[in-house]
Length: 294
Image 1 (cartoon, rainbow, N blue to C red):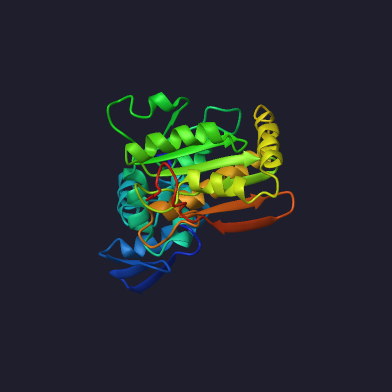
Image 2 (cartoon, rainbow, N blue to C red):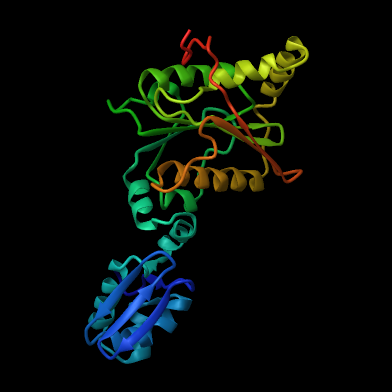
């Protein structure tokens, strides 16, 4: 910690001073009891933390020694409620999960790899990278380049690109790697099906059923080929932001102990142009060469 590092206390976290030596920091799902002579000092620091403050500012405003201000911020940071500016992005966890501390720890401990070989959003924003241990690769052969497989693979592609997704599916299925495919098909963002190892329907089940459901199989295949030709299109930055915001939510749902991903055994489609979203269950295809039983 340096005296210029900024810390803050979110508005949804309450500070209640019980008496001179006892107080409570309380969030909707958890609380932390503070005890000792510093409780009176905490009461004075809380208004500063609401706006964001530094140990240097606290020392100057409250007329206390800088080491005292630093020690106070360190103690409050250990509660998990008061955090640095980089921690602002973690506020979402307190809203999205009933066990934010556990979810935050799991996100930090989970080795997530992003594979994005095509011309689509490939630079995750700070809101994602600050709370997720994320490594980026651009080739399927790099998945286990360090000798270890990722604990979760996320792919982002332009178009349905069945050949690419089939190759990823075969690799992840054989190596027992959970996989979340994301793709931009026209104006639609598609998530899933998320495939934990050897469970639920796989991407091949989804794609084969998608083709079979078309009234004219050749027309459907031609439309997909035309979509693939758009893989080099440049998407506006607002689409980048939307893709990664939705990806952040789904990654939290995959890792959090109290949530279930919407894309487990399903494909979630979001069309930002029409503000439409649909979730379609994907049934396992009995004759699927990847996950089928027959």
